[in-house]
Length: 391
Image (cartoon, rainbow, N blue to C red; front, side):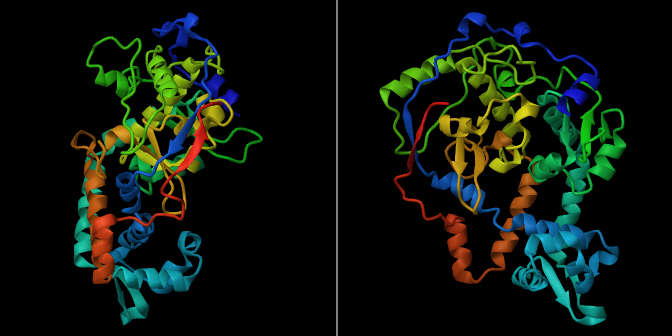
């Protein structure tokens, strides 16, 4: 399937040999050492602050799009997406009642659900922000497709990344329909999936965030920003390997890297660069690990490619709160639990306001605890676990 779309794609992708790389650097030097996973409470807190936010936002979106911003309970609970999200009508109703700062339930006219005045005002601001941000969101979606070999992704994969990219729920009917010069939907013969294809390549978009940070300087051997959780220590063998690895040539993640030997550190640096760029495309500089787990062939990755998140703990942080694994780009948070100002996005600020309203609906004690820590850690030991720094 990917091969069919790749042959059908138009435009030109820069080859890896055209990038400032050197074949002599392709040595199979992957080091075999062990690193200890250490919890980062600040980054775990950043992830935990979105607890239930996506569920609340989905309901809010459904209600706000109905006439008069109101929907009957039976109609809302009959929605397939609501049943999939909560599992039962009782659970959905309990959720609506819990977050009374967002939702108002009324017995008049058949037990209706509407938004509180504050929530509706914030929703209006969010819609205005989405409209103003469309050029930025359009560029993020185009760059995501440009990262893939066939310049295409199954719509299901795009849907998984929709929230992280900041796309509206109706992006298919809005953004895609308004830009037929950039996107097309295709369902190849023998494939049950519908794919989103990129129709136009833009060299101006094919500049990575790391290259932009070089401010016009030499991009031949760009190193990645690295920081570690307090208490984390690297053995000298690891430090030596990391210094050598950082000094390797940097491959632009939008370039064709098919000529790289996947067994080498040079190829691994390219893989890290792809995920570094992908996380930069997200609003909060993080995404759940399973969102990218089915993109191996599309990104030109080796087997067990997501192991780079555990091998490069100074670039990525793997949070295990909320019952899932979330990959966080460390540099975007600067050691804290909030995005650095240079990475701020107005949609993130609005989502934080929604989260604040949700916390205000909780009992006082839980509200204080949530505000202070915003986190529920799992049962793993504080000592962390060791992983092998090898393929």
